[in-house]
Image (cartoon, rainbow, N blue to C red; front, top):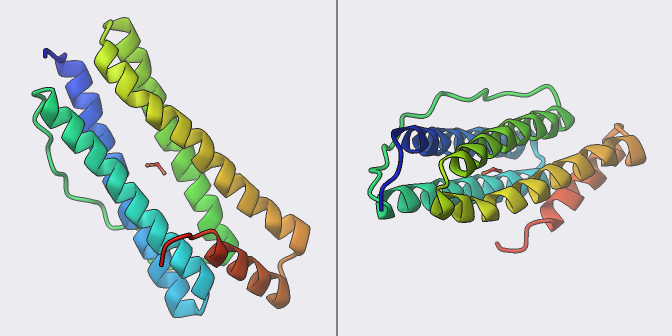
Length: 166
Ligand code: FEO
């Protein structure tokens, strides 16, 4: 199968974004663990694993269509945060950037009549809806429950319960 240089570049760039997301969430998980946010740490460790699995999907797809995936260096993420809320806000911003990048590849695939890449990206388009919704809903909790110690403890528990696997 023939893939355009442009699409190849965009897919390789997406590998970078997913790898950076995995390391950002890992840094958030570690900060939460050190800070004593047990539930949030569990949540962000799982989130980091998810991003690694997204990265792998792009690597496999690119290799399967003869595009040669490039494994990137990841940039060092922030390792400390102002508050639990600020980690969630940063995560939402990151997901919004990822959504834009996915849409840009979809639009290129449409223009190039690259049906295979377009179909492959369907899963990611839906995933991004879920991801943004998830972080928006968590952010709302700070307005709904509060920002004092008891409220944060409650939100930490909620985050831990969002993780289905141990
Ligand atoms: Fe891979 Fe959360 O976007």
